[in-house]
Length: 436
Ligand SMILES: Nc1nc2c(ncn2[C@@H]2O[C@H](COP(=O)(O)OP(=O)(O)OP(=O)(O)O)[C@@H](O)[C@H]2O)c(=O)[nH]1
Ligand SMILES: [Mg+2]
Image (spheres, helix red, strand yellow):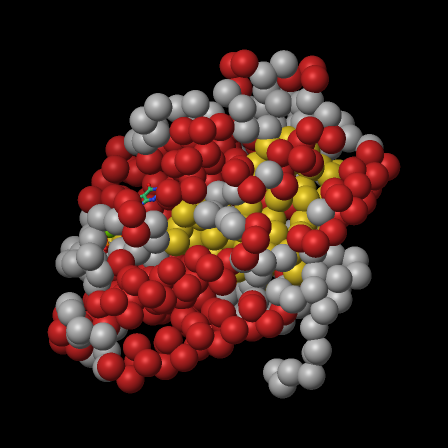
């Protein structure tokens, strides 16, 4: 088997992650007590990818739940799905990070790390052939950013053969809850650039717009935003978990989507995204689904099509779909939007088809795109960061925890390089005499 272990960190990570697990269990026919109740072979065939079966037939998520404070864990434990997780896999501290990356990355994070690492190692030992580690977190707070970065470093050092995929909520400054989000985010972006192999980017402001404008939800809740993120994550992982005509895995995805190691920040969309109640499902077809996937207003990050081009894109379909239809529609999309794709990567649209549909939807599609327009989102983090940093505002909290100004400078140099690379490679024609 090619197992995936999930590590969910901090409040956002645990809330999104728990929702993801509840959907995964549902798709694979596992009830809240961990017992298999499925009635389709396909539910069971690849169940081991995300679940470990124990004596007594109980299935446990391959998941570590981590936080520097206990309250999120109490929420998950007290929820309908709390008993699904192995009780030893709730790993938490009591201090909290005080919204400070440096606490999560330095002292407090290092106090929590041995317990998290021990739990993760136990999960790794249960795997036959580990495919990757999936980290779910937000980078605006201190734990998801700081502890997430510390963990990524350790994964790279000690589990170097395995792929690090992150599902990352980037900050949305207009909806910001804390003033230091730019500091936490820039420091975490640096770690993601250096240590992660694939980063699925989500922004609450964009998710909010999709809920409001496309789904018609008047006052979206975090639960609604998390539902969208889950749709994207389920779509991304479906062909790893179910049989299909054309399957994908995390490494294949990385090989196709990441032309240079640091350029691995993906945008994502999911279709159909209409008010599900109003949708005539029988009318769904590959053309509509594909068009909706490429529609900028359905992206789960703020996406300005004028700001960049697709370096590469993967479209992951679910349902009873023919590969001829998909190929024809992707060719038409590329033709019609020729200018939105760099032309120095000739075959940069990849697809997979998982024949098992999502519950209640005969056809769905998830787009995962490496688009150079992400440089605009990165610039926004950078600009917000410099507004505070040039006045050294709030910096003392970070210095107190052992970070230095030079750490911030090294980060911004690195982020600058990332932005410049995205800019350079986003040109339609590129002179590729670049050192790597
Ligand atoms: N999409 C989504 N975003 C969330 C959720 N909870 C918090 N956020 C966002 O995540 C960022 C803060 O991250 P948190 O996960 O709350 O922080 P943390 O990682 O627990 O870190 P500290 O609490 O600061 O130690 C903010 O931008 C919030 O708006 C959630 O359930 N879903
Ligand atoms: Mg928290």
